[in-house]
Structures are given as C-alpha cells and as structure tokens.
Amino acid sequence: MTEALELLSRFQIFGGVLLAGIGWLANQFFKRRQERRVWRLDRLDAQIRNFHGPLFAEVTASDAIWQAFRDGLALGPGAAPDAARAPELSEAQQESWRRCVREVFMPINLRIEKILLEETDLLDGAAYPQSFRDFLAHLAGYKLLLVQWEAGDLSRHVPATPWPERLLADVTEGLARAQEEQQRLRSGLGVW
Image 1: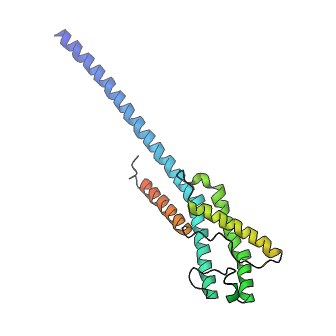
Image 2: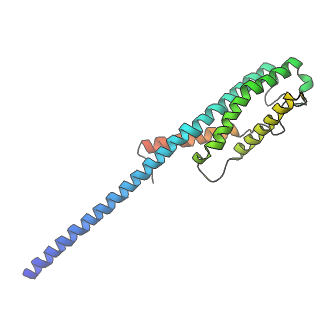
Image 3: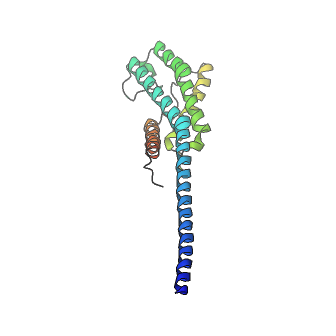
C-alpha cells in the first residue's frame, strides 16, 4: 500500500512538473507569436506611413495632373507632347508643357525618386518592381531634358523612356496589400 501511495505521489509530482513545463512552453509560444505579430504590425505601419502611402499620394497626384494637362491641350489619351507631335502644338503649348514639367512634374517626380531610393528597405520581397526601375529611368531622362532646355535645345519634350504604365497599378496594389494585412493583424485574425 505504501508503495502504491509513493508511486501515486511521484506520479502527481511528475504530472505537476510536466503540466508546468507544458504551460511554460505554451506561454513562450504565444508570447513569441504575439511579439512577431506586433513586430509585423509595426513594420506595416512604417511601410504605409513612409513608403506606400506617400508613394501612392505622389503617383496619383502626378497622374491626375497629367490627365488634366493632357485634356487641357486636347492631346487625347496616351498622347504626350513629344517631338513627333511638336508640329501639332503651338509654341505657347510647348512652353506651357515645359513650364509644367519644371514647376509641377519635376518636384513630384523628385519626391517619388526620394521615396524609391531612401525608403526601399520598407519594400517587402526580393524583387524591386520593374515599374520602379522604369520610373527612375524616365526621371533621369527628364533631368537630361531640363539641362537641354536650359541650353536652348527645345527639340524634345519628353524623354526616350516613357512613364511606366504599370507604376500606378503597382503602387496601388502595394498599398492595398499592406493595408489589408495591417487590418487583419489589428483584428487579431493574422495567422503566423
């Protein structure tokens, strides 16, 4: 009988230690899970605040201004005042375009460039979107055009590299993905 009581006592001690160990492990698991969730949410907040949000604002502003300017010149969708179209534009329209590039588009484009170059660490994934690279090439072309315009060469009105058609979609999709994940994590439905 004493052996049975001693065995029962040892089993209770072992069971208590085992349950405490399982409880500690479960606590550590859920604590780490919560830490990862908080870290990811903090990163998403930074991505939206410093990368996706400002990039979306600048690209959509640029697009809206371009649409209004294009419609004002009656160039039609997808058209640009390039050298091939220059004969169709009056000297006043060409000057208006150059002024708009210098005073409106270039400041926006430079802010987009700054975000793309200085906040790239906030971009998820290993691949840098092609539209971002294409935008940087487009902007480099405009920087060269500004130098040519200052030197009196008005033969070109847009760079050889066009505005990347995928840029607005890539920026919009990136912001939407980040916001969706942010909301999922905030609501506690994130699966890790």
